Image (cartoon, rainbow, N blue to C red; front, top):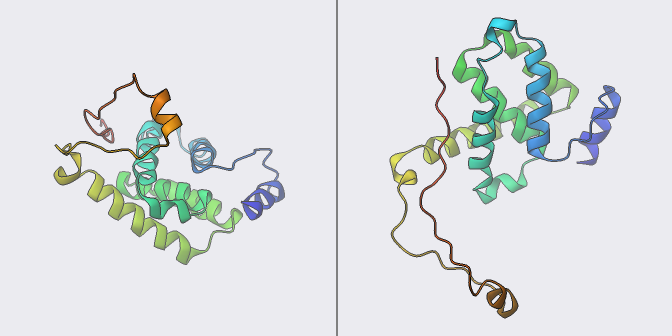
Length: 161
């Protein structure tokens, strides 16, 4: 986190981005500026946000630097949407954020695998077993009259051509 803040200050970005979501917003807005008006809707921010949420369901992504995770998601989406004109923008963001190429590739592969599994039929079917929570007695008393159940998993929105 400290290094990422230093990098942001060096490139004169007056932004306090500390979470992957904030980096996702920052990188998205910077890349949108480089797109022509007719291509601005080719990358959907809600879809990127849903992909980030899907990644946050896995404990492994808590080990990723927020900037690397955000850039990995954006880079994969750019590849999927075939926005070749943004590839240079991603490389520029990678350079200015001082993200190692190996690290970016490593996390891109994990994100890709996660999103593939998340969108599969196996994952999108709710489990019939009840979800059990282990909570303290105090929390249990506070939640005594609250009953929640999971009805379905959120899905990643499809791109509309």
